[in-house]
Image (cartoon, rainbow, N blue to C red; front, side, top):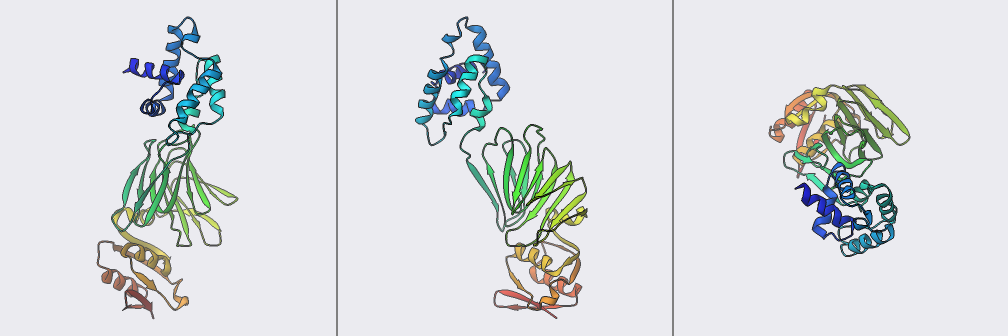
Length: 313
């Protein structure tokens, strides 16, 4: 296998790789690539037998990439990388591996159960219902970035050289390797970040906040950021398919029910919007059972109107 890879690296240096071989080279570990380059240099007394001049190598690679523009984009720094290879015996590997035009994939959890997404670096993400994750098929050389609309639980593989970013709304979470939860639905006003393991940095507009395990950050519709001790049983209840709230605004609870059951819920009396709710209900219950338990807990009532629900005194 090593001999095959070494031969492939030699073809890459000479600009003679096929499209399939280029893909294989791209997936090769940097350490393995460097090892094969050094072996090739040692095997050849005259390095020009193995390594074309920087200009010739650049032109060969450029021509090869030009024939496969659907998969690769050539950047001018490849010429500089070729010179580095000729002089130092090592291509700036990450420029090739990660310097490509970013190709994104999308994962969406609709009305089915939450789904798991496995990322290229070994990290894992669990998406709650009605959530979407946008992520690159191949992460960059110096950072890993994903984009979230909805709620997701992250288990990020530690890589000190490549921090992991989660972008949502006008905010971002930066981590090296940790376990945390982000809740940020585009049609809702409140955002939450809950940290279970490790250390993260949360940035919203110009403000940055560091978090420790067991802490939660709430960003409200005005952009105000608050950090406090999290009730993990409540923040992570969705992973157990449970609605659990402790002194939460009524509208926050109804928003969760609307997402889960796909039903419109209206509360015409705005004075009721901030009424506090403490409740725990299994999400496997029928909608009428959930609505009955909710309204009884706060002394209200509900009625079905058309295909929606109205809650009132």
